[in-house]
Image (cartoon, rainbow, N blue to C red):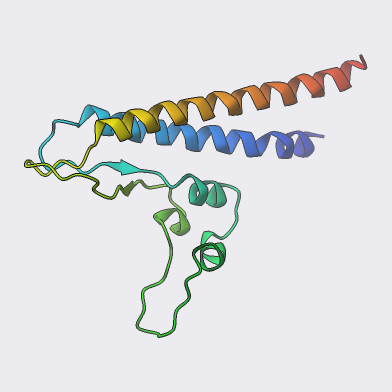
Length: 141
């Protein structure tokens, strides 16, 4: 029974954990918006979730990216450090450079912060709905 309950809730548990980590990274970007030479970072949610669910991110990257190695000298297409078993943040591409070397774009960061927060809340609502369905089934109502 515990394994089935665990399996039913594990996807949303992992999604909440990754969303929480991403929120912290985005908040750090916002906090360091005026720090010289600070580079904005972010977590690749898809790769992090694949890693959390035990799927191989590198197995799906060739099909998703449409890229393949044509030479042994080419670099591997890992996509992120999540494929290495870690959810380490990646650096964001620089949209508009600044004189002090800081790559934080506050408009992008605010939008990502709000979007991630809404998705976190949606995951909470889904897990709450799933728990309510289980309680209804257990109570027989």
